[in-house]
Image 1 (cartoon, helix red, strand yellow):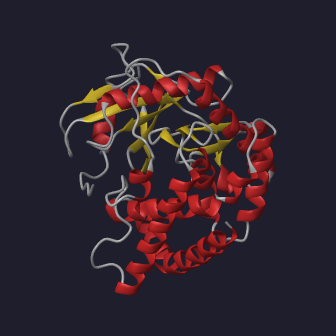
Image 2: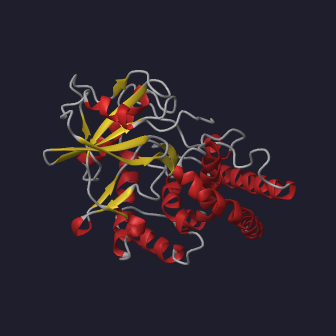
Image 3: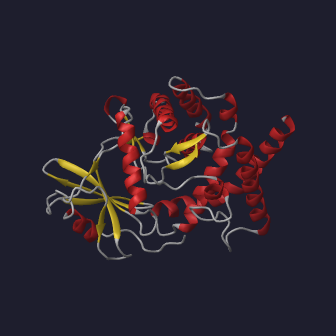
Length: 331
């Protein structure tokens, strides 16, 4: 999983412009380097987001499936950015070898908005709950077309011995007692998820990464979901956890949770038993993103987050295990 290919350069982004009906003189600005590298290309009042994929993370078929689902969601009123076809009419383009090797490229219409965590008004959280419920309702009702393929966020991907985003306990990081504590929390998450079950009422297509900057709030409260690069089959509650996890320790998680749940229930039922299991999904999210900070050491986001995660995870694992023990006593 350790990938040191680094971000796609501005020169690669400019080369990608030639694959699209965009002016070669477009202004190109780096937006974000995380799993992929995203640039904003602007010319004559039009902006697009150029996403240059990390080599080896997704295939052409999985990216085409991602775009297919986003388009299907838009037909139901869920706001996602539209993909821009290349000059050859294909959605996914291939940029030749450069630093890190060939890159799969997708362009999206640019969306203006403020990331949800930067919005002080709590109402967008309620609206997001409704959008999330609509997405999950669509997931339950939609029949993917032939050839549709997306990686799943199942037990192995989240809390397996070789999780998709990397292990949360790499060698040389934790003291022995801390490592045992974190592994015990991981085992408890596995046990609880197995008991929770993955039937169609609880498991289906999800966004999986709705935290940080992937929910944009625009004028009039318009809520746009972006960056479906990690969408796939998973637990619906994991989507709620991905939104709420960045709020742990801020004192606002409970209030935002209640807003999300209230908005969700305005669109689709959400059982109290599912909401009660949220701590399990928050710990799953913690372990998953912790692994990401170790397996993506070249990204600024991982560098910013790692020290805080190292400091907070042992106590969080201990608290989760205590909650797990109490829940076991009640059942």
